[in-house]
Image 1 (cartoon, rainbow, N blue to C red):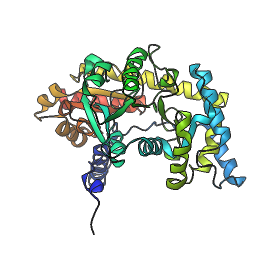
Image 2 (tube, rainbow, N blue to C red; image 1 turned 90 degrees about the vertical axis):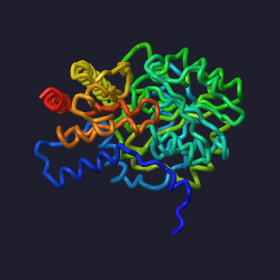
Image 3 (cartoon, rainbow, N blue to C red; image 1 turned 180 degrees about the vertical axis):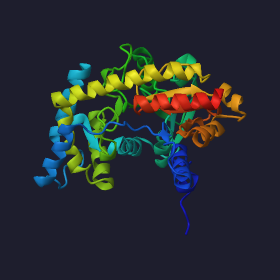
Image 4 (spheres, rainbow, N blue to C red; image 1 turned 60 degrees about the vertical axis):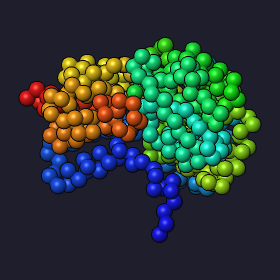
Length: 394
């Protein structure tokens, strides 16, 4: 059977490879001591009670048939209200498109906007699947090296310097996976101005926006103007990962083209998940989400100082999400391995701690970095630190 080139050329999602290796190790040797998973970006919290109850009501009430391709009007309205209440930004519900997760939102945006050969600029490191969405639309994903000096985010100067005749736009993330860092409002504004000068597109992945911990950040890119395209999700802040529900905010002119694509590619997002998501915006649910946000921040504040004490440097403290991007070069030398890939498997096999190796996220110094997901309990995070300490210091 002949396999299409796009399928042959796609890179593995290495964090999943680590997960497979962890599962094989447990199957082979048992789960004693228990494997601690700091490799997957999934909240350990599940959907709160009102959301679960809303799903049950939808099923028992027979609200399980197709919705509009772009989602329930009531859910689009609730998201619009959330933008106004949480961020003080007016977003018309007609610009909001409900999708089958943020992944579908990114796919729809890329298919609607990218022609074959168009280049999209991204920071390096960045979330690996974002590159794949661009390439699946026959575009070219070009990573621009970033470092701690810019908080691992692109600058307007870099975008201006790398813009070419075939460049179509930028795909940013704020807060970012894997670094947990956000774009300052002025930096984002400056980048968007460069893009607009070239008649390009600014796509911003905001799926971790609700999990922002620093007053200097945490503002939606939609505050700039309606030409911004924002991707968001119910998975992270709203704790609905497996429900596969997200949304896209687009300029008015893009609604109809994306609706046609959604009709053909997805029919509609999960009806049950949409009815359940309406309950995310009830006062009790929002209060619970804020308690969880505080818990994630407390985990960050517990974990990072101890990680640094072990010799794993965190050059920029994350201001959002639940990731820590740590330089493991010194720690790797201490146990006699050359880089983060080998160090990740040493942690897996000798400490039973699963983490994401840097090679998943680009090519800029990734052999020196690991991504820790702190979407785990305080007890497990402390146990992971203790195990790494024994490995590194005996």
